[in-house]
Length: 92
Image (cartoon, rainbow, N blue to C red):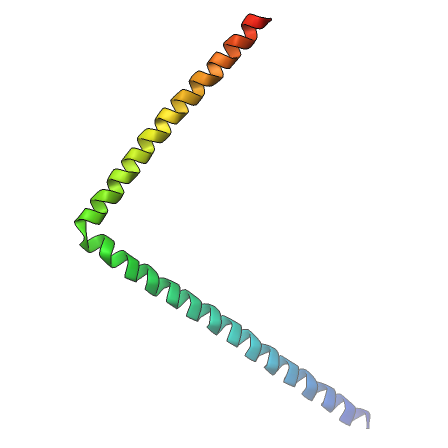
């Protein structure tokens, strides 16, 4: 009798393992599908960038202007910091 209960327990464990494996495989498959779709959209977006020189030039110009603006903002920020430190020292 104990032997049959043991076999039932083993059967239940195998059933749980199979179900867990199925669930894991479904989750992995879903993630793979999401990654495949994401990769397809990346490739879809990449083609116009490579084939349209105007778009590439516009993006390069935008990046250059952004970097120049960022540099000017950093310079102004440093000037403001120096002025505020200078004003603080004059008051003391």
